[in-house]
Image (cartoon, rainbow, N blue to C red; front, side, top):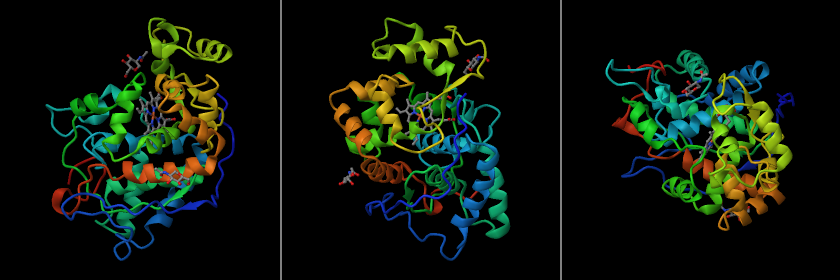
Length: 327
Ligand code: HEM
Ligand SMILES: *[C@@H]1O[C@H](CO)[C@@H](O)[C@H](O)[C@H]1NC(C)=O
Ligand SMILES: *[C@@H]1O[C@H](CO)[C@@H](O)[C@H](O)[C@H]1NC(C)=O
């Protein structure tokens, strides 16, 4: 697959998201949470991630999706990192909605580095958000200021992940209601899906729209694009889960190419294609396609809202010593 473009290692765009109040009942995230307890947190994590990105060009997209899947189920609480806790109940990662989630163990590795520098201080939930933030900026996207202070969950349930993780054929109504529940307006909802400017999708995620002609969602594909997808994914039931195709034409660069692609019938997933056509979202797609800094600004405020969804603070959770298991 054609993902050989170099990472843009310096981003000059710095965007402060609008101040917001996070959490409820006085349990708030804070922009200087680790000021005393782990002052070098951001530079430590950035250094670790740079060396990961050198050898794994797909890692930034993996971290960005990891944050969404963590925050979407029980809130941003690192519940996605837990290995199965009870013999009777499997954890989130066992859900088919978490198909192709990668790099959970890299968060464990970063955690061990942080345990040496600032033992017992930094939650796994905050590391996930920080890894996503650094992934965006090191891929050429905005440098987003995010508040910290999330605690880690003591539970994780694959059933809840089954129920909460959206399928690629989700309708625009369902898509909008997911992000509205996180306090996003329609612009921010369209902006957060711009995360699909990074990374890939596997055949499993697109054969439904490639081969089911009854499905309305499958329409509107550029003919040449559809042909190339059918070549990459030739069977209705994929023979392997190893084949993937890029999410947009520049899958290692965080830019507004995704919006230009979906406007031209080159949306990979059903929902990507749907937002380019729905009368509520299409004008916003066009705006983002024409104006990258407008997209970056709206993405940044959306990212901060996503990263604050249903967080646990103070005594509502713990700081795990190892991200994949309870203390
Ligand atoms: C309704 C909302 C969404 C749906 C239905 C959806 C669905 C999907 C699907 C099916 C894939 C491909 C998985 C595969 O086959 O490998 C994917 C990839 C991805 N998604 Fe989403 N997504 C949504 C929202 C988001 C959000 C909000 C973010 C981040 C803020 C995000 C970030 C990503 C990234 C970065 C990838 C590429 C992952 C990689 O390359 O490993 N998505 N998404
Ligand atoms: C691909 O992954 C899906 C979802 O996890 C699974 O149901 C399917 O059996 C896998 N297919 C192959 C060929 O491994
Ligand atoms: C989107 O970006 C524009 C341009 O920077 C800004 O004026 C607007 O307030 C932003 N909207 C949201 C919801 O972030």
